[in-house]
Image 1 (cartoon, one colour):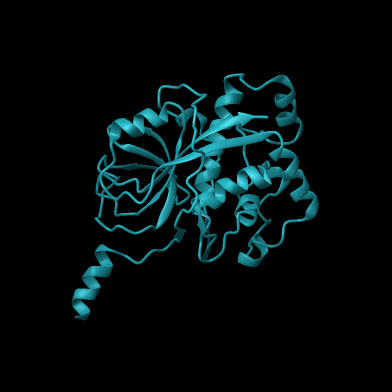
Image 2: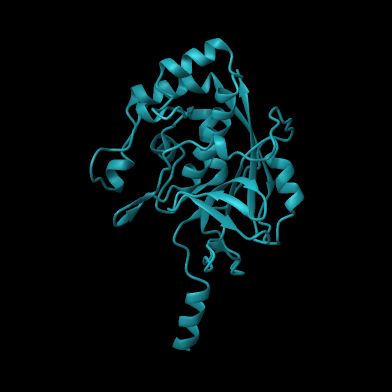
Length: 267
């Protein structure tokens, strides 16, 4: 029995991350306002951000990947000169742009405001928080300096920072929709490609082993372990991860169990 359990744990490891089941599926009506070729790679904010802090984990993969999606959408608008001047001035004057010319947001702020705990947080809770609490630049609520622990990272957010988020919530609003939920079948690639024409994909599912060629292969375990972002589909599903290395490739039959598409609505 112990040998059987050892093999089972090797093939189907226990979840390292925790994703809470989605309850709210987002907007009923969803009208795309972005049109690209389906490749979001040039709009991914850098530097990449990881969730591991030496001997502990922030357990905020939902927020990390959701922020990756929000940043990509905002970078699309910024780099294509689609923001009205008033909003462009707001972004430039309030520290949303980093030294590399990307919009870089505070994952720490969203992780706390959305209610992340050691039991995780729901994908829907993240998007509800984005619209309720607003999005802030990394400079407004950065990670603590030096070595820090869970209690420091998730300390109560100061009221002036919360107030700044409320101001941003009056400016940025994100329409979102869960278009696939708890589906552990191989994805319909044409559907993913169609969604990617207007939105990166925020998704949650399983993590599996990588083969000798660096491709993550489906391991047939059907429980939620990790949330990530899809930024393109070609010969593989191209994924941005908060587990380093950040850029990963999944085989095309890898299930995208819970998937969310997003649109920016400027107020």
